[in-house]
Each structure stands twice: as C-alpha cells, then as structure tokens.
Image (cartoon, rainbow, N blue to C red):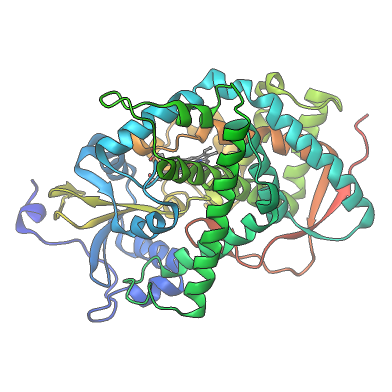
Amino acid sequence: MSTAAVAGRHPPGPRGLPVLGMLLAIRRNPTAVFMDAARRFGDVAYLKIGPRRGYLLTNPADVRHVLQDNAANYRKSPLYDKLRQSLGNGLLTSEGAFWLRQRRIAQPAFHRQRIAALAGTMAGAVREMAVDWAAIASAGQPVDIGDEMMRLTRTVVLRTLLGTDLGPFTTGIDRAWKVMNQHIGDSFWSLGVTDGWPTPRNRRFQAARAVLRGAVEYAIRQRRAQPSGGDDLLSMLMDARDEDTGESMTDEQLRVEVTTFLLAGQETTSLALTWTFYLLSQHPAIRERLEAELDGALGGREPAYEDLPNLPFTRRVIDEAMRLYPPAWGFSRQALGDDELGGYRLPRGWLAFLMPYVLHRHPTYWPDPDRFDPDRFLPERSADRPKFAYLPFGAGPRQCIGNQFALLEAHLSVATLAQTYRLHLVPGHPVEPWPLITLRPRFGMPMTIERRAAPR
Ligand code: HEM
C-alpha cells in the first residue's frame, strides 16, 4: 500500500455540513454535487453523505478495479436496498450465489444469436408505432415522446422476452413506474426513517407498487393459461430447476424476476431513445447526416437486422446520446474488505461511486465534453480512450445483461422512425435531466411529429 493508504488519510472532497455532510446538497441536485467534486478534487474524491462515506472515482483505472478486477471485494451498495424494496430480491438487486444462479438461468435468453432472432419482432413493433405516428403527424398536436418510447419498449419486452401482455394493466403501468421511480429517486439518499409512515407520498407509492404487482401477476397467469411452448426468457425462468433440489422457482421469485425484466428492459431503453430524439431535434446538421445515411443505405425500405452494419452513423448517434444522457446515470458499490484506490485506503464498509454521467463528461477523455458529436465514436477517435471512460451498461460481472438487446432495439427504432419522421421539441419547452434512479427529462419531452418527404 502507498504512504497515504497506510497512513489511512482519505482523499480531499467537498466539506459539507457537520453530521449530514453532503446529504442535503445531493438530495437537491446529485449530478451537480458529483460533477463539482470531480472537477475540484480529481480522480478520487471523498464524500460523506449522512452516515455513509465513500469515494467518487473518476479515473477509468480505478473504475475498472472496482467493477472488474477486484469485483469480488464489492457488493452492490445499501443504496440498492430501496430498489430491492420495490422490485424484490432478483437479478438486478441480489448478491452472491443466489445472484449467480439467477444470472445463469437468464443468460441463454441473451446470447447474441438469440437476440438477433428477436430483431424481426422488434422491427414489427417499431413499424406499428410509425403507422400510429402518421395520424399524430397529420393532427399536428404535440405528444410526449418519452411516453411514446415507453410504450414502444414495453411492447418489445413483452413480445420478445415475456411472450405475454398486461391486459387491463397496460395503461396504468407507466404511471405506476413513474411514481415509483420518483419516490425511490427522491428517497434514495434518505435514511428511510419515514418509509413506513402513512404519508400521502408513501400511500401513492404503495398504490403504484400494487398496480405493478397486479400487472406482473396478470402476465404470468396469462402465460400459464396459454403456454407458448417457446424458448423465450419467461419459459426459461418458468422451466428452471435447482441443480441440487430439482425445485422450480417459487411464484414469488418468478414475479420478482419478471418485474425486474419488465422495468429494466423498458425504462432505460426508452430513455436512451427519448434523449436521442431530443438531441437530434437540437442539431439539425447531425439529423440531416443521419437521414442521408438512412436514405442511402435503405432507399426508403424498412430497416432489418442485416441493414444495421450499413448504418454506423445511426449507431454513433445513439452511443453519443447515451454518453451525454446515460439512462443509468450513476451506481455504487460497498467494499467488503479494505481496498486501495488512487493511493488511498478505502475502508471496509465504505462506498465507491461509479458515475457514468460524470465519467462521460470528463474533459480528459472527452474533449469539449458538452458538445453532441457522434463522430467521437469513430474507431480512429476512440482508439486512445480508456474503455472504462464509457459505461452506459456498467461493467464486470454485474454488467447489464440486456445491453445487446437494448442496442439492437435502439438501432432499429431510430433507423425506422427517423427515416420517416422529424421530431421537433415544442418551442420554449424547458429540458432538464432529472436524476432519479434513471435519468429522465424533468418536464417531459413534448414534441411535434413531421412527416419527411419520401427519399428520392
Ligand atoms: C439503454 C438501455 C439500458 C441501459 C443504459 C442499462 C444499464 C444498466 C446498468 C448500468 C446496469 C448495471 C448496474 C450496476 O452495475 O449496478 C444494468 C444491469 C441490468 N440490466 Fe440493464 N440497461 C439497459 C437495458 C436493459 C435491458 C433491455 C434489459 C433486459 C431486457 C436490462 C436488464 C438488466 C438486468 C437484469 C441487470 C442486472 C444484471 C446483473 O446484475 O446480473 N437492461 N443495466
């Protein structure tokens, strides 16, 4: 260990208030606190957030150490407890041998070839949305593109992975998740003292949770009533047997995993698409390049899986949108034993903050970081950039299981929709990232839809 590490000094960081540290500031504006700490204190910044202490890591080598090389020394941090209370103990929130078992059950559903085989179903769902948009475009009324993208990604998860629908719960579920996301996001940093109190806020949260639970139970019931005989994710979860006991998952565990996939699969991808369309609306020259690529490669034909290698700029636009607005903007780990990071000792029990939002705007790795410039992702401009400076899907053993699925869906969706439509933000509408569990647009994303002239 280095001298500082041996001496047990922690790195510098913002001073904050006595006892509370940075708690109130982080509850007010978390991304601002983390951005500011990285700017002022460099690679490793000390943060005290109420009773919790930890380091914000913005050197890709340290990020790699925590998420990958020394991942065995870390668990997901207690901040995930809030998420566990809502989703249950499933793939996203569990630990250890139980997590590994669940990951192994689900993994085959996400193999590259299997994902590729889902492209036709994904493309079909996007085409249906494109058809719906014709009427919206004619009417000229703005729609919330965040809601539209949520509708799209939910349909895709239900059809491709779960092979079922939500029946009467379909319309209630987006609203329920919005309430839950806001509740968990708002109380993420709190100590949970008032969690059980019957306040209106808590009651709204419990009601939303009940809607979600009802929806998932409905989906599973439907599927049991009409077994698909297919080999999708839900079949794998239903058919899985414990190697030792031969037992299948309990109904409760099945419900937890279906909830996890329903939410993890729809929310983040829909936000990636929403921010992409927002950025395109603000950068007409880039939108025109995108349209030129689509017209050149497709000539008005609907895009399919085989077309995607010929649409590299479209993919760079998505990568760059996820750089500026990473849907999973920040996550954290807790050290199981002492570690050393950037020359400082991280004591057992302390937290490591890994923040894609901050890493993706770090001027050392991203010159002119606030500029929307998809060509940063050209191979020749990426060669010198450390891999762990870009983390939209996390990394290491807990990396997103759905990353290829999400990228395929986003690629097909942007290609299909931008080929036919231009989206315009309602003039003067304020747009501000809202860091809850995911990075949502705080005031929504109302846009008008304009039909493009057919390519010549
Ligand atoms: C643009 C879209 C997406 C983004 C940005 C995203 C981001 C992430 C990130 C950052 C993590 C790791 C969190 C951590 O290490 O603490 C994660 C995990 C996870 N994601 Fe995604 N995700 C996306 C799409 C999806 C999709 C489409 C699915 C499923 C269909 C999915 C399912 C999961 C699951 C189950 C985990 C937990 C994996 C584990 O711990 O083994 N995600 N995601």
